[in-house]
Amino acid sequence: MVVHQKFVVKIPEKLAPEQAAPLLCAGVTAYSPLKQFRDSDKILRAGILGLGGVGHIGVLIAKAMGHHVTVISSSDKKRVEALEHLGADAFLVSSDGAEMEKSSKQP
Image (cartoon, rainbow, N blue to C red; front, top):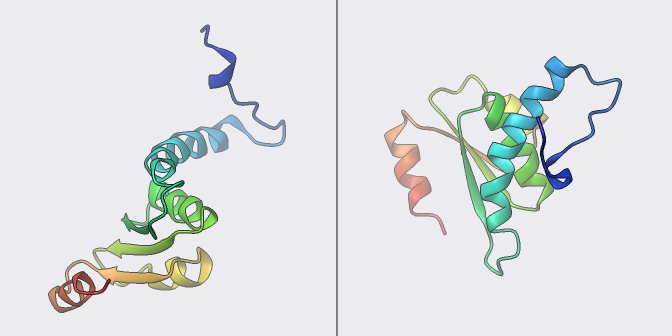
């Protein structure tokens, strides 16, 4: 495959291809929309829907960019992981109508 050099990423020798591929895929998927708002003067409150592969990377990238991050999940199972391990600022359970309603009224 022939591509322009600006689209090529050097993968460190210690990182196996099967480890690099998900990082590149999720990284591009999460990074691109967050990058669009990076230079904005407004405070960005990012909502990450789901804490799977892309969600994990999305939280890490958004936090690294200095954004306020809320993880939105269908259950409470990943609350500790989102808040304590990944550094999310808030966690919402989408099936909890009262919690979702309350969060929609916050600035």
